[in-house]
Image 1 (tube, rainbow, N blue to C red):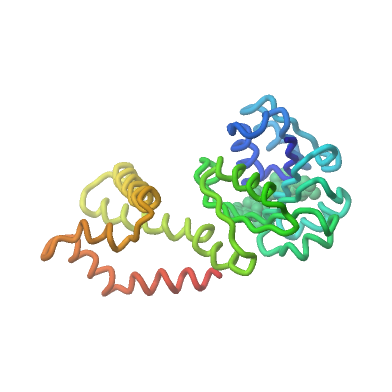
Image 2 (image 1 turned 30 degrees about the vertical axis):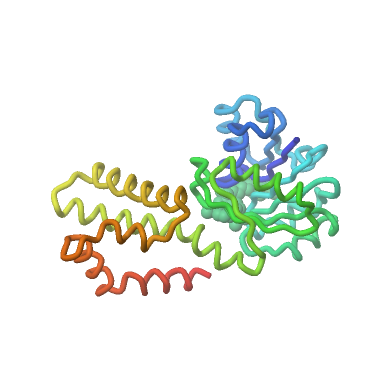
Amino acid sequence: MRIAIIGAGNMGGAIACGLAQSHLTETREIIVANPHNEKLRKLQARFPDIRVTNDNKEAVRGADIVIVAVKPWKVKEVLNPIHPQRPQILVSLAAGITMEQLAQYVDPEMPIFRIVPNTAIDVRASMTLICGRNASEEQTQMLLNLFNEMGLAMMVKEEQIEAATALSSCGIAYVLKYVQAAMQAGIEMGLSPANSMRMTAQTLHGAADLLLANNTHPALEIEKVTTPGGITIKGLNELEHAGFTSAVIRALKASR
Ligand SMILES: NC(=O)c1ccc[n+]([C@@H]2O[C@H](COP(=O)([O-])OP(=O)(O)OC[C@H]3O[C@@H](n4cnc5c(N)ncnc54)[C@H](OP(=O)(O)O)[C@@H]3O)[C@@H](O)[C@H]2O)c1
């Protein structure tokens, strides 16, 4: 499976690194195109077998999957000259560019996927949303397998992508904001910033693992730590008095 990645920025670079570490493709089958060499040199320094080029057409020639990881306003100018077509598969990361719009720049009958990773793709822990058109079950499964190598991938309907993006892409900032707030509290209570960060991040990690491993509801996990008359319920009620739930709902709806 030969994979071309157009754009070696935050997302394209992280996907290239993630794929290079996966068992789904050989590193030498990954080719990354970018106009400037600095990012390409960094990629090759880490994974010498990754192939790189400044020529998008060269990258796409012979590729089975073409991943477009340029800014949304560059998608048209990038896709028009390379014009991917069947049996290739197009994968776009461009926020806000619909599959209908993408189909105007490529073979309209080709399989097209829109994907929305989050920045945790850099450490292969992304929540990646995927929606597709003209794709067989086998192609869809292949995309899921690819992005499951870099975290958790999930199929969503295109009309749900904005809501799902608010939860996963913007959501990572809100979760980090919680960590930052918890660190401020920890520091005020005499803990070091570094330890406050590690304690909060690991607690978050554990909470997420509990939910994902047990496929359970947060209320059930919260109940386990809220002794009647105890300290946790006092804190939880303080959060509610300060409008925590409402603030989270408003933030996510504002990000849609
Ligand atoms: N960042 C996020 O959290 C996030 C999440 C989900 C989706 N996305 C989407 O992912 C896409 C990429 O975002 P990003 O954050 O990775 O942007 P980025 O860091 O700016 O990367 C874009 C890359 O595209 C390269 N590029 C520009 N023109 C090109 C061309 N004509 N041909 C080939 N490459 C070209 C740029 O090269 P130079 O800089 O060297 O000129 C840069 O390396 C966007 O469409 C964004 O909507 C981002």
